[in-house]
Length: 285
Image 1 (cartoon, rainbow, N blue to C red):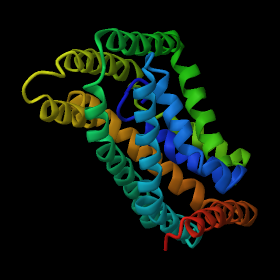
Image 2: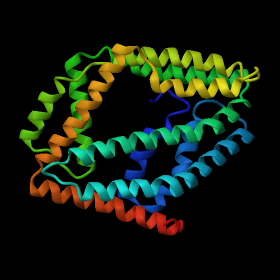
Image 3: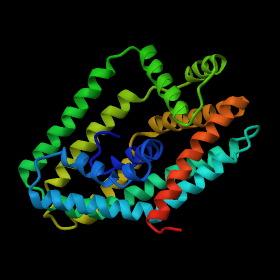
Image 4: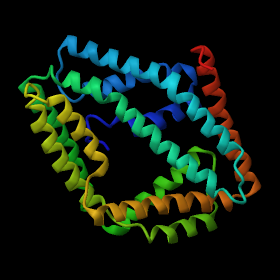
């Protein structure tokens, strides 16, 4: 969710953790806090004191994640390595739910640090944050004009890259089935963009009222409202796409041949070994 000041770290985090484990292990992982901090610093021209606060928030988060969440990621990896490829549904569902729980815990962790930090923003900085969101929205608008088939092609490529990241290079027959399954994808990008725009507008308005009574409680409730945006029809489409993603993962793993299985396990073991080194270095059991 590239235009959400509060929740941006979640999707970035897991992909960066996996990338760091595969590229340079502990060296890259231990700089994850710098990566997160630098991302937040792009939202506005913050003072030196505010930048220092962002560094502290990001560093504390990395410590918290390493101690509380990385061991859970390790367990997920171990479960996937030992998955029953003939019947992977149960493990895939558990992993998907665990991933969503991890995202939610990360979002909850950032609530109070972000709320407290937001109180230090001046009107100019709030305006700059609004402009930053606007720039992100304009980038999305450029892509909203694409034809539906181009959109599906993009989603197809994202799936291909995702499976490749865990060592599964899809065969031609699997690619054909994937394209057939994606014909059931429910387009939500236009609706999602409008919902993000509305949420951002209300977020900026709330930031401007940071000195008002009950601000902390109101902002906390508002941040959590992002998890339930959209009407019933939008949520049905989103749920259908989530079910489709799970269906695709189950299909690919259950149809994997010996070469793909070996590559999958080899990649996950690479991630797992790096996670073990990180936990050992940080003295986390």
